[in-house]
Length: 188
Ligand code: AMP
Image (cartoon, rainbow, N blue to C red; front, side, top):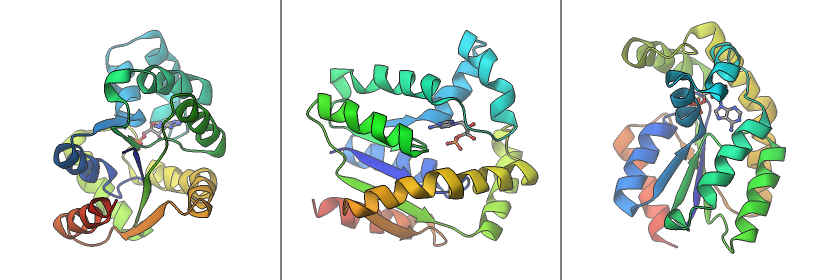
């Protein structure tokens, strides 16, 4: 089983992915986390993307797709992926589609956590004090939200047309969302 979880910044994708990974023995692919590690480790990629990321812009497709290709082609994670933060635009979605087809894999369910902008602002300001991410201030969060609406909503539409989309109300408690997601996964 391979899953994707979508949602604007602060929607709770990371929290829900952690839960799904543990419960269903999946492997989380969070491009945001991977890219933050590159910056922390001061790699060549990290140096290239650091300014872009702290300004809330998307990193170049080529960089992200290369990272994804390495992970998806690793047989030990086959059919155990939960993609969190990827694909972010239609080119990435097509790239992922081609990669999975090559490996005889597919996406089984796509979750979208729906959260309104006021909740996002509140959650991001709470997270800022805990995680100290450079892109977690209100102005940048709004920019990331707008990028999500413009670039990522069309990807969600793409999966909706394939009948894979499940929209989850992300305004509720973590445990209520956990339960709804589990109930959907348990049906397949
Ligand atoms: P996230 O942790 O998913 O909120 O991502 C944090 C930041 O990492 C984003 O604002 C982008 O700068 C970068 N990023 C993460 N995933 C992608 C992606 N799939 N494509 C391009 N940039 C990404």
